[in-house]
Image (cartoon, rainbow, N blue to C red):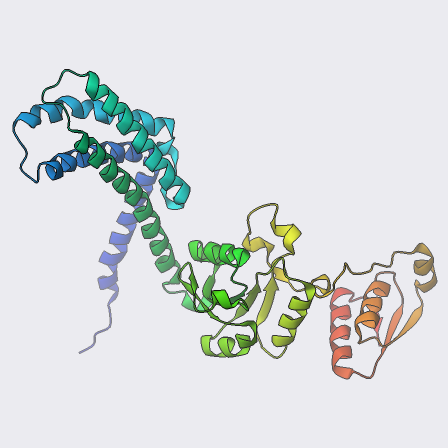
Length: 365
């Protein structure tokens, strides 16, 4: 029997997905009202659960009147405090530790105000203090759990939506550096699967980070293990997230990756990432200043420019670090021809390719 799905079978699924997306859009537009409703519902449920737990599921009839007489006051206090803390304008998909701390603080404050109010109300029997404490605990857990649950569900849905049908377009990334910068980069890639990256793992020489995980992503080894990890994990790109590392570390990493057919991108040095959050737009190809212990020398002498404009210039040792940099700088001053001379044919070939790419009008021999 042919088990393939017919076009008609996919129509109900498409209609269900369209309906779900439409409902999600409507809920998003009314998120502030939903946040307010969730606060009210959680407060009522937490207050009810506190009474039930306090009396071991045997709710005395005398406390029913107390419950309904004080419920409205508790809801009013909790809603007022939520407005003071701007809970209704927070975007749940970005909830974090700070939001949870605000929730606990706001719940404690509202419960404290409610306790003072209960002491002044002529309601008998009065609300037990244990009920107020239990309600505060239950409400804190529920309000925080709602926000974190929404965030986890949103990120899971985004990852599944992006990966479905487009797994071949996503680049498998290995991050060199399991420090703060690596954490920022991996977290951003995980939270934004539309960027097209899949974080496979980290490599780091710090033994304290060996066999650990960040954001659920494992540390797969040391920098020397990069060739093995690239082969076994089918890596497409290596992101160097070590902005405070010295140039010697970058040179070592480049040497390790020299024979690996993967793209190598890098975050800027420490001064480029300390002034704001790390962003994927900051990733760039490796440049010569990443490998030098100083800024590259720039020859901008007018006398030199006047001497070489329209002339043929011979550079000996052009494949070395000094000769290749001299060739790059001279190419900026408009010579008619650059003649590159060196015994290292392979290195000379790459210098030639680089100059022809940057200066296609220049004749290079």
